[in-house]
Amino acid sequence: MEKTSYLIYFISVFMASAAQILLKKSADAQNKSFLRKFLNAKVLIAYIILFTSLFINTIALKHVDLKFVPFITSTSFIWILLLSFAFLKERPSNKKVIGAIIIIIGVVISRL
Image 1 (cartoon, rainbow, N blue to C red):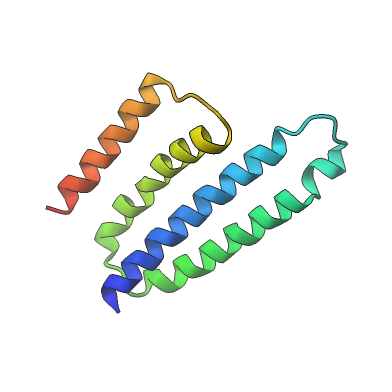
Image 2 (image 1 turned 45 degrees about the horizontal axis):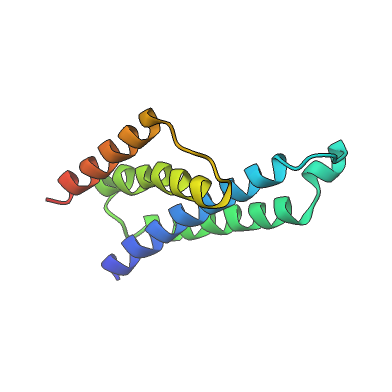
C-alpha cells in the first residue's frame, strides 16, 4: 500500500498542476464579461480537478512518509513549466529552466 500511496500522491500533485493550467487558460480568454470569466466550463472543471486532487492528496498523506512530501510537492513546479509550454505555448525563461533542473537534481538526490 505504501508505494501505491506515493504514486497516488504524485498523481494528485500532477492533477493540481493541470488544474492551474486550465485556470490560467480560462483567465487568458478575451472579450468575456466578469461573470463569464469566472463562471464557465473550464473554470468549473479546473476547480473540480483541484478539489479532487486535494481529496486524493489527503487520503494519500495518511500512508506517505512526511519526509518525502516536500520533494513530491516540488515536482508541481516542473509540471506547471512543462504544461505551460505544451498547452499555453509559453516559453520558459532561463531562470525557470535552471530552477526546474535544480528541483530535479534535489529529488534525485533525496531518493539516493
